Image 1 (spheres, helix red, strand yellow):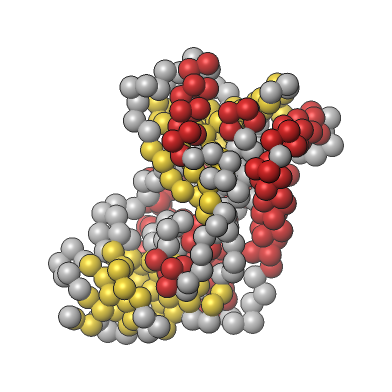
Image 2 (cartoon, rainbow, N blue to C red):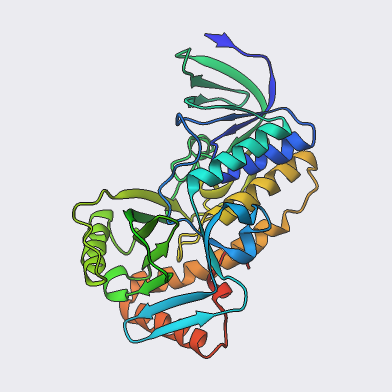
Amino acid sequence: MKTTNYIENIIIGAGPGGLACAAHLARNGRKVLVLERKDSIGPKVCAGGITWSGLLRHVPESLLEGSFCAQYVHTNLQHIRVHEQDPIIATINRATLGKWMAKTAENAGAAILTGTRAHTITPDHIIVFTPKEKNRAIAYTNLIGADGSTSIVRKFLEIPVNNIGTGINYMVAGHCSKMEWHLDTRLFGSGYGWIFPHKDVISIGAFCDRHNLSAADLKQRLLQWAARQGYDLSGEKAKAALVNSDFQGCFFNNTYLVGDAAGLASGLTGEGIYPAIVSGEAVAKKILDPGYAALEIEAMVRKQRQHRTVVNLSAKHPLICSFLMEWLVLLLRLKIIDFHTLEMAG
């Protein structure tokens, strides 16, 4: 088994969180290696909806496929249009975002290896499969887990995952103009169905906490709901992903977790891109300065806990779930709260 030279910072996972962390570390003169098990960077099961107020501080507007000042929200009893002067949500292609972030990290000095899977972790080195070698040991000082909801780094830390959701997505050729959210509690519990316009395709999908519905039940209900919206998905290919919202920390001595690996996604909305990027940069800042307070993570966790309260009540009391959704949308309609209340970017 071959051992490489010492590398100070190893990041497992080249998603938005890992690449944001890599870029910030490299930009500040630190040696960084990013390991990505897939052969290409970027593609992921994702609706591609991003919060305008949060994410545009981190990515250029030129990457966006569409931006929407209006959001159409439907519940069992209400149908409302939420409108603001500036765009509320934008859509982005995850592959496009990934390639841009990878290029940014590499330009800063980070090295990225694709097709490389970490399979064993020890306190000072990892063993990986590479395109050329079956077993390669790489020594590190800092290990960052940015490897999603089934994170091997989180398993190494022996941190369980109890709060997890399922997202199912179809990308259908076509065009539509409205960004729609369907909070149908009879079908999706505390989750929702979505219709998000992209450049040449429409993202149609549903998200729900696993305590509310199994993945198989969610898919069947998604197909029924989509048919009622005029979309026959029976001949389309579904893609599914787990969404980890079980946050138990980011900082564990010389080991760190970001994004879905840390459980920073919202259990209510499934939003994960923004928390991944923010936590990736926060972890980099913590490595550079151990005294860094990471208040941005605390703010996201407070919002996440509010979302979790709604999810937990919904799982135990379906009638309360319906009431909460109707109440939230009524407050939106009366402009007592704004759409950003539901975002992780608050």
